[in-house]
Every structure is written in C-alpha cells, then in structure tokens.
Length: 505
Figure 1 (tube, helix red, strand yellow):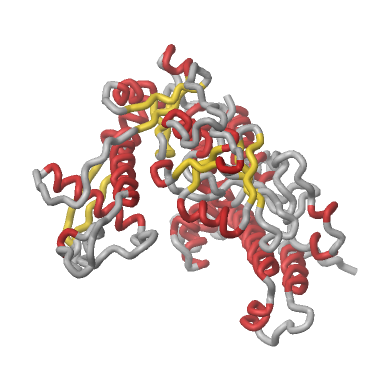
Figure 2 (cartoon, one colour):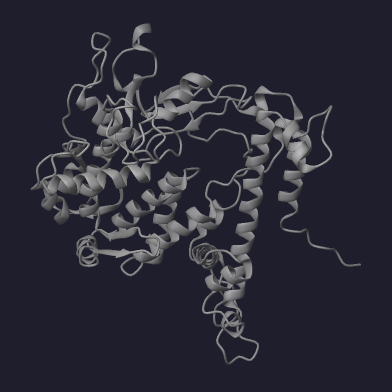
C-alpha cells in the first residue's frame, strides 16, 4: 500500500478556507462571492485579504523551489546544457515570465530566490548547502507564530490574540513569514553584488543581519536595508561604484506621438539628492502657500496647477507626480528669467547621514535623505562643499531636543531629529518624505503634551487625519513609533511598527 505525500499548498488552502468560513456572516452568508464579501464585516474582510497574502506567499515560495529545481536539471539530450535551455528559454526567469504570463522582473525575482534556496548537488551527487540558508528559513513561517500576533520586538505590554480572545476564529489563518519573496530577491541581488570580494560565510552572515533588520518590513525598507548591508560588505568598492554611477548618468528628451515630451534622467545618488530635495521643497511650499484666487476673475494662465481651472477648496487633489512636473517646469521658468512664475524658488535642504568614524577616517559610507543608495566618503566630501547641506552626524553632540510644555511648536532641530527617526511620514509603509510632513504632538499640547521627541511624530496630512478620525493610538518605544488600530479595524489591536528601520552598528 502506497502513501500519498501531502500537497505542499494544502496547509495554505486549509488556512484560507478556515478564514473564509469564519468571515462569512452567520445569518446571511450569501450565495455568491460578491454577495458573501458584501455581507462580511470590516474586520473579517481585512482578515480575508491578509490570508490571501499568505496563500500568495506560499505559492511564490513553492514556485521558487520548483524553478530552482528545474534550473539544476540537465537537458534530456545532455547536449543543450539545462532543461531550461532545452525548453527554449534563455534563463529560468524568462521561463517563469512566459509560462506564468507575468512581467520579466517578476519572473526574475522568483528565479533568483529559487537559485538562492535550492540545494545543488556535488560531483558525486551529494546534496550541498544552499547559498543562503538564512533566507530559506526566513521564507518559512516562524515556529509558533500566528497570523495576527504582533511582531516580536513590539511595544511592551501588547497582548497576543491567543491570550485575549477566547474566540476560536482568532487562531484562524496561516502564520506569517518574516520575509516576502520580493524582499528575499532584493537581499540576494544586493549581496551577490558584493560577493566578488566576500567569502561565503561573510555573505551568509550578512544575510542574517539583513533579515533581522528587514523582517516584517515593507519592501521599500527591505531595499534600503539590503543596500546598507551590501555597502558595509563592500566599503572599499564604494568609491569605484560611485564613479561608475556618475559615468552612467544620462538624460534623454524626446517627443511622444501624443504630443507630450518625455524627459528621462538616470542620476547618481549625489545628483538625485538635489533634484529630489528641490522638487519636494517646491511642492511643499506650493501646497502650504495660500492661494487668493477668485474663480470668476483669475487669469487661467496663472492657476497654480497649470490646468486653467481654479484650485479646489480644502486639500488639493493634484497627484504627486503631476506636482513634480509642475515644480520642474517652474524651476526652469525661473532660470529663464520669467517673472510670472506661479511659485517662488524655495531654499533646498539636503540631509546627509553618516557616523563620526567615517568623518574622521574617510572610510565607510553615508546616506542621503530620500535616496536608498548609499554614497562613499568621496561623494560625501564633494557634497559637503556645497551650501545648504545639513550633516546628520550620529553619536555626536546635538541640540537640546526636549523643550517641555512651555514651547508649542517643534524647533527645526527637533524636526530634523524626527526626520532621522521616522524617515518621513512615520505611518507603516508610507513613502512621503519629510518635506511632505508636519511634526505633530502624540499627546496634544493643549492637554499637557510636551514638545519633545517622545511626544512628537512626523505624519503626512492623509495619515494625520486617519489618526484623529479613526482613533488610532500612537506609542513610542525605544525610539520606534508603533500604531495601534482601533478595535473596529482589528479586535486584537495588534501594534504596527512605523518609522525608519535603522541598521545597527
């Protein structure tokens, strides 16, 4: 009698089925999917979305394993190299892209992870260790974890749903993995860029550090952490890489068939810093600037959005990418000596972040606010020769940042310190830079809240309204902001980590 091995996706399917059944309305479950979703309460439908993410993760991890196994298989004829090439594909990433009908980048990410977690065979057929065992472990759910359990480094006093709710539905769902397939692909790609000068144990140790800092983080934070880890591995190669990036800078302009003109620029980090900071400063100044325009008498050519229509009352609905286009145009209007430009040029502040040892020794790296790619000490010295730069020297002397309750508004020094801690809007996953945010009191100043870092946070206007309108709670634990949702969104009120993830020294 033969036994059948379990389907690798059986657990994920069972977890989703349990969550779906638990989310259905007990009185009116509904006959079709659309009706069932409509009858679910708010918390239940969000739980279904989370479980769909767990199912997708399980599918992608299995796809990576299958792709890695196929990539190691020889051609059936033994003449065409591997099975991938014998099947007519240039590489495993193209194979996934074409067979799944997804973007090439998506297929490449799955294939790259597959190569990192697949055990190759030696000359004698013995299994060898996979290149990145820490990533292999991080792609699997943590032992004993639960889909709704807070992160291990969450604020003290936060309770686990298993101990706060006797409802059996609290335990439904698949446990969450600390790392996504996309995050794993980013870490593998960055570490392999440094692999030419590092030993295998060094790469494996670096992968452990990257995962420890990037676990459960949004993808943009994983990308930033991976670049920082790669830079630490390859500090001697940082300067040549900066030079290669500068030589690769390009800017192209051509007219599209639609009549629009496409401006495309590929810039090194030190160049992009000024462009990004300048555009963001202009956008921030325009957004906060009062517009005294009467819709019946105003000249359409002078409308702030360039559309010929009056600006709407209240918060503007102009997308950020369009605002950047307007700001870019206004910059060159000023350069051309146009006196009728709608905005005035705003002083630009570029924040460069480094440590004291890098300044003294010239070895190491620095980061620029809003730019993920680190720069070397040479680029840091070149930027330091320009005006309006603020060096953020860590572990050095700083301004007095705690002002108590006698002062209501946060100082410039405090806002810079909050920008260093939060990285922009502190809300989990929000990508708005510091120039799009305001410093707000967690405990209102009118209620006795002090004007200091532990009571301050940077929030963009949208998430500031979410805090007040939906009654979220914010706490600061060891310099890390945590957002606690209201009970109508999450009955367990699981804290969500916000702010910038810092790489430990």
